[in-house]
Amino acid sequence: MRTKVLFVFICLLFPLTLWLFMSTGAKNYGLVSMVMVILAMIPFLMLYEMKKPQAREWIPLAVMAAIAAVG
Image (cartoon, rainbow, N blue to C red; front, top):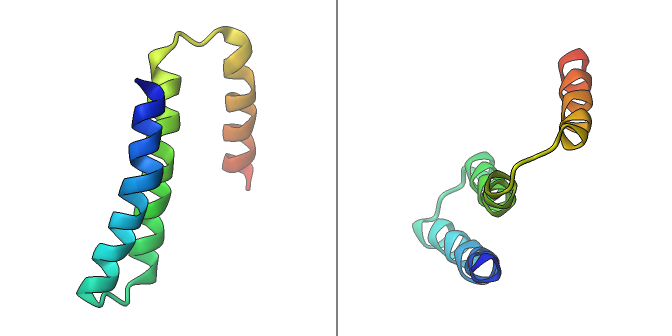
């Protein structure tokens, strides 16, 4: 199931999104970049939410959040 979702996102959704933006003649490259980043995050978030994270997995996330807040 997970590999099928990843296959759809990588092989179909990314090129389809790029083609859609190219065919409309959109010059808003920030929007295209943000859509691509969101599409890249979705499979990883799906995999992360499907399992129960342990406390050991939360520590790097908390450290990265703290560094991002300071930066």
